[in-house]
Amino acid sequence: MHSQSIRADFLRLRVQGLSLATIGRQLGISKPTLIKWNRQAQSDINSAIAADLQRISLEVATIASNQLADLNKRLNALKQELLSRSLHDIPTPVLETLADEQLISRHRKTQPPQSRCDSCRPRDGTK
Image 1 (tube, rainbow, N blue to C red):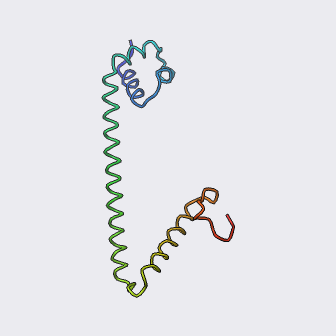
Image 2: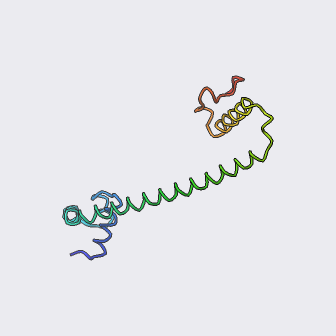
């Protein structure tokens, strides 16, 4: 007979997605015993996996929400900064060209040279 802590370890490892063979090696339990435990505890395993997925989904949603709030804050600060500048004398096409050049420049800095797209490669023929 195996202790409750061994069975709890089995459940924990199974919920983490480990195979019965791996669990057997780690815990020193025979595969037939693990198969039996797996059948007996299948609903508990499924419930624990579902709870983990729900917790992870909530964490991801919270992180995404926080990042979105941060980006909105930055966007509003940028809008305020642009409104405080006197850009009304600069024609819109010139501003669009400057913005495009900035985007391409930033994109180039984040891409390794071998993975750059054609529009991101320098025009002087270098890579």
